[in-house]
Image (tube, rainbow, N blue to C red):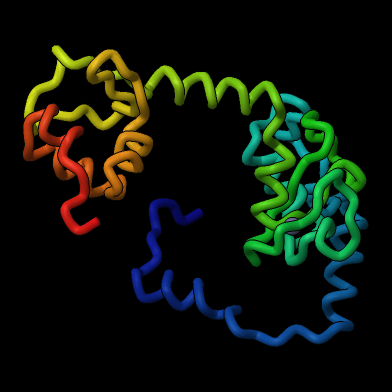
Length: 205
Ligand SMILES: [Zn+2]
C-alpha cells in the first residue's frame, strides 16, 4: 500500500478539467440518471414546504416577495389599469410595476397577489389610519413662529405659521397678502427684519 503519495499540482489541474466541456449525449444522461435512481438518490427538492429551510409564515417580507417573483416572474403590468379591480382608478403615472399583496398576510397563492403599478400600489397600501398618522406627524413638525422668537436669518425648516401683530397665518397666506410669492417671502425672512418683511408690499405691483 502506498501512503503519503501526493499529486503534482499540474496533475490536480488536469484532473479538474478532464471532464469539463464534454458533451454528454441524451442516452448517456438517461443511463446516468437511472443509475442514480437505482442507488436510491433523488434530485434535491427545492419547492415550498419540502425545502429544508422553508420558514412558512416566519419568513421575512423580502423572501415572501422573492417567492412570488420566482414563481410568477416580474410584475410587468398594472392589473388595475387594464380592468378596474380596486376601488380607485389607475392614474397612469408610472410604468414601474410591483407585486402587491392583497390580504397583508402574504399567503403563498397567486390569488393573494396583484400586479400593480407603483402609484396604485402606494394608494392601496395607504389606509386611513396610516394617512392620519402621517398627517399628525406633519402637523407636529410644522411649527408656529411667534414674534418674539424671530431671529433674522434663522428660520427653522419646519416653520409653517408666523404670528405677527396678533395674527397667525401661514407663510403662503402672508405672501399672498403682500402680493409676492412664497420663495420671495422666505428670502425676505432670511435677510430682513420681521416687521419689514411682513409689511412691505410688492414694489412692482
Ligand atoms: Zn396602476
